[in-house]
Image 1 (cartoon, helix red, strand yellow):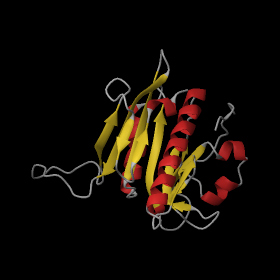
Image 2 (image 1 turned 90 degrees about the horizontal axis):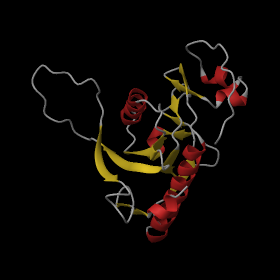
Image 3 (image 1 turned 60 degrees about the horizontal axis):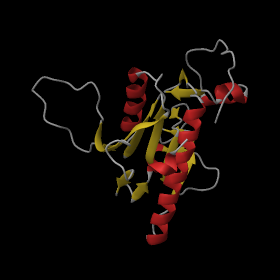
Length: 217
């Protein structure tokens, strides 16, 4: 979704969901709440929107094919939908660019416990600090799969797609060392147009096959 530039109002550092709902929609949709803290979400250029939509369409086709072959499964694929990280309450949420979640009741909030996969499309202007901070929150919420899509310039296109799986056990580290983060993703697949001419091919969390031509601008 492309959002026009709007002057950011002077908001408190922390807000509740109820306070957020009282803001104008064009302001509220640019904000995530991280344990109640106001975090402004940067909206990318048109390339960001196009590649996000292409990935959404490709994943939806893969999910529907998987469900037709395994009717006991039921997945929904969505764009820019809030994922609430706690079991209750709404003042702790992220808004991934695309996501896959278990089929739920109509108009029901999507919780992290319902979510199978989240994905972010990163423009060249995104900072590594911001990317890692959001990735850690997804991991801490227990979301099994995280996709990271990096965009290229001159010519525009997809530079790489990485699929991360949530680590279910902790690696061995030296005695006395305390990890900075208690949850972590591990790279389970990586694809670039230069090294993977057939596109994205992975069997998890369900079989996914995406030729590069489906992702063209």
